Image (cartoon, rainbow, N blue to C red; front, side, top):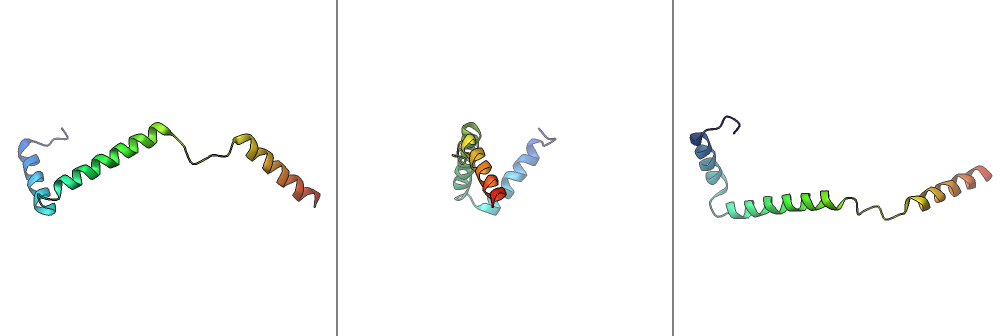
Length: 71
């Protein structure tokens, strides 16, 4: 596992506990879990932002170009 042994993992865990404190570790873990869930959900659902049908947007672009050429 990336060349890390048991001793290295224990040292990393101790450093994390010292930096963040034992009380904040559950909050950090749940925040990371929510971020991963939201990322997976957004990947599964795809684009929800684009609500304009493609055909309509092409027609509007053509009309705009025709108006500019006619003016």
